[in-house]
Amino acid sequence: MTSHALLVTGGGGVGKTTLSAALAVAAARNGRRTLVVTIDPARRLATALGAADLGAEPMPHPDEANLWAAMVDATASWRAIAHRHAPSDVADRLVDNPFFEAAAQHFPASQSYASAEEMAGYLEARVWDLVVVDTPPAAGGIEFFSAPAEMRDLVGGRLLRWLTGGSLPGRRVLFNLTARPALRVAGSVLGSDLLERVAEFLMDLRTTYDGLARRAVQIEGHFRRARTVVVTTSDPAPLREAARFFRELPDVATGTTAVVFNRVLPSGWYSPTAPSDGPVVENLQRWGAEAHRQSEAREEFAARWKTRVATVPWQPHPPTDIDSLADLIEQSEDLPLERLGVVS
Ligand SMILES: Nc1ncnc2c1ncn2[C@@H]1O[C@H](COP(=O)(O)OP(=O)(O)O)[C@@H](O)[C@H]1O
Ligand SMILES: [Mg+2]
Image 1 (cartoon, rainbow, N blue to C red):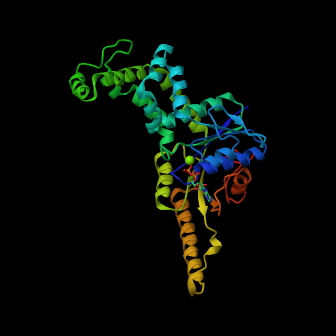
Image 2: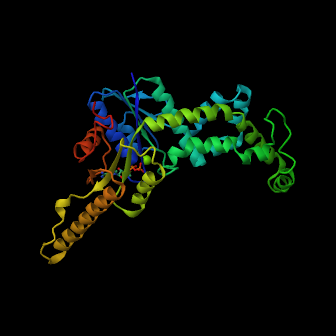
Image 3: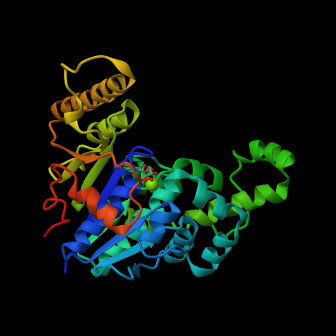
């Protein structure tokens, strides 16, 4: 069986997690074995997906056949990554280093890289027809796609080489000679013990380079084969993020991409000839004007990037149970569900 990836990207707060879940529910109800890999779901959404305490191990949904869910925990993923790519004694030391968790959790590319490695593993397991991946919020938008290259450059890059010297770890000598004077000053401020832990962390991290570099290439292959949904709202900041996707990732932004405008107001709310009197009429006019502005933003985006756009309506209540998630896709317009692999 071939597993397809469906990547859901876009700026912060546009509805990526919600739409990932909704697309996954729709695919499962169409008989496709579907795994949704979510990040940071609101508690009620996690509950709707069948587990309040989701982990990296995919869990079958208790009431929805064909639906599985998993949640990426960057620290846990990085523990596995360290063990996959470093000798086991080095991996143990790396994982125990006080900087390990901070780097895994707070460095945006490391969170994205962790999700990307998890995605690759799920795809290669060939258990699911469709793997829907909600991209991490920390990286915001398209950084998810550059994370493997960024991680590879960081771990194998000049900064680490300069700090750790030409030869690979194993030795306990800290840093190279040029770096040492600057680091001695830092050491007197931070305490040399702390500095030693940083040095050890960086040197140990370098041993993962070969494995990580090879894996990054495979992950980039998965990205190129994936179908992508770019989620936006009609507002300027998310639209700029969506445009970056087309501008900066022309190889990923191919025919397999759909742009979804979320939280859309019905265009029927706009009428250029409404009467103008009283607060209710005023309210209708404002929302009418907003609906009109939204539809103009969609047309402009579609023309500028020569792409079709789909819409998902603004719901009065945030969709947090499985039926309301399915409704979201039912009420959408122009979503190319077949092309995205949601319908077979
Ligand atoms: N179509 C919609 N109508 C109403 N509320 C929505 C819709 N899509 C998303 N939301 C709400 O918007 C908020 C942000 O959505 P979320 O999926 O968490 O965004 P992201 O993952 O991109 O940060 C959530 O409270 C969610 O319930
Ligand atoms: Mg989210």
